[in-house]
Image (cartoon, rainbow, N blue to C red; front, side, top):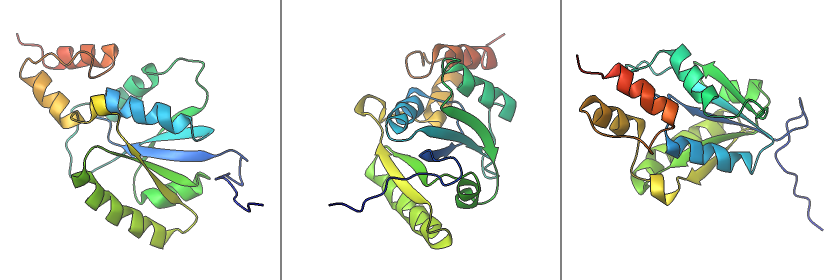
Length: 174
């Protein structure tokens, strides 16, 4: 007989996870991770992180709108929020038992592993769950998408259609 207990938030009795990122912009790789995380958790908080080291192309409001437009209105299991400060503190305060991190390559793992260990030391109640990005999206990142779009490259199929349109508008040549 197993004594295993699944991740269940005491506050909501649901399995809640936080998926953080700058999402500047959201890509098909992000969507892949989100859909797979929803197979594991009842609710997912997509937390747009303020990163002082990054100069975002899109405003916080634009990123929130693009993320929300990526999901059907009936999808009530997803919440979009903004986070600053320690992510693990945010996750704990929101009743999440896990932080979702997407991995594209071995090079991502070293940094993410260190971060997961530090988070675990700060808050033992919050686990880190690593999900490998689907093979067809393994080579893309928001930075690569922006760079390609900035130079007139076609990024359709790598981001949702509404995001592709926003990139075209942003980089439209006179």
